[in-house]
Image 1: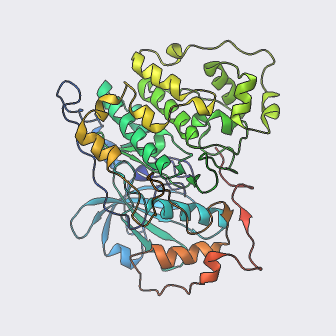
Image 2: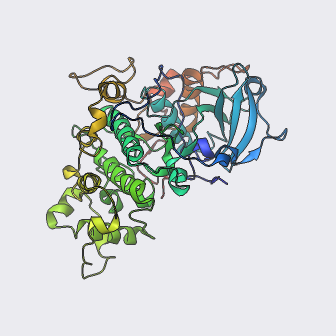
Image 3: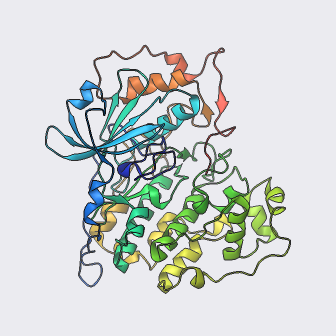
Amino acid sequence: MPDAERGGSSVVKGDTGHDSASQAAPAQVRSPMRVKASFKGTDVPCLLLKPDATNEGHKATTDDAMDADVANRFHLVRKLGQGGYAVVWRARRASDGGTVVIKKILDVFSNAIDAQRVFREVMYQREANHPCLLTLLEVWRAHNDRDLYVVLPYMDCDLHQALRMGAITKQNQKQYIVFQLLSALHYLHGGGLVHRDLKPLNVLLSQDVRVRLCDFGLIRSTGAVDAKGELENGTEQVGSRWYRAPEIMIGSRRYGASADMWSAGCVLAEIITTKVLLPGSSNSNQLLRTFELTGWPTPADVTALKSDESDDHFALLPKVPPPQRPLSKLVPRAPEAALDLIRQLLRLDPTGRLDAYTALCHPYVSAFMQVEELRHEFVDSVAWSASVAPSDKMTPSFRMPIDDATRMPMHVYRSHLYRHVVENKSSLPPPPLSTVALARCGAEDEVVHDFENDDMGA
């Protein structure tokens, strides 16, 4: 049964937290093509999913209440998960019978933290146009003015489930998954965004090995605040502990796309072994396991990690550094090309890690880059929405219409979502929108910086 709490399984398989992917009225997103003539002229074979994989959850019943506007367009099939934050169903469109996922986010505007989180998801993903990002098909406003319906494509499983059931059996399947994941990161980073929560639960898969990265709730823009593409005041301790970059582990608030690349290296190792590479039991144990892999940090490494709290964290570690463990022992039976890519992604110094484009050209996945159709589909032809102004011939960075580094009052997010995002209007008229409120908050409103007391634990 899928996890029904925040940070659980992916949205397609029943996540009911606010950190699942959603997007409103995006531009047309192309479906990724099947691999051709990349490995000895053969296609990447389909995943070996169990026959009952599509029967997860419980059969939908008449107790599954849904607003009439939504119920008239979709027929509920199975309830995939339910928790304090959302209810998720697998459904069929009444118009053509197509399978989708409906996620009803509960009490979106109950507090400013959740409201900002959902607002980020919708606003960032509605602009995204990449075949390896989960597309949001529709957004519906609930009649109670508290909930929000998001309609998403149905995917067969997430990467965690696929590894658990032994569905990924071929080396070129693993390489194709990594290639698509890196292309999604290249797209996000080119748009000035850091995902901040890359893990197997957020990598969705179809049986024909198509990848969709989901969960945009922790995404932050970097380009607007720092010329180096770093967050000036990023939230510490974001993302799941096992995939968290060391600079974030020791409290750095200046990090960028390289933090995602560390997570990608951890995910790659897990794809190969089906086991978590660094399963720390606590923050200090996670750091210890990390340093066993990378070697104990030098003074130059500590400086590169950019944390004012590093001494506090190192004080909790053993006085005698543990011996370094060879990567080949932690990731046994891995091809040498895969080990080399993992090494270059899991460097302690963030500036020494490969960026997403360079990783795409690495020998482990470069065969896909050499296929012209694939390179065009995933890398060369994708760009951010035309509504984003390009700058200096680089992939344009998307900027939030509301300051992403400042937490606004709940009514600001509600007004903006209802007026400018929800395309499928319900019978209720949209609430009045104050232009001034969207530009800035009035004197009576409380404004909180996002990086203070943020509810984004492991």
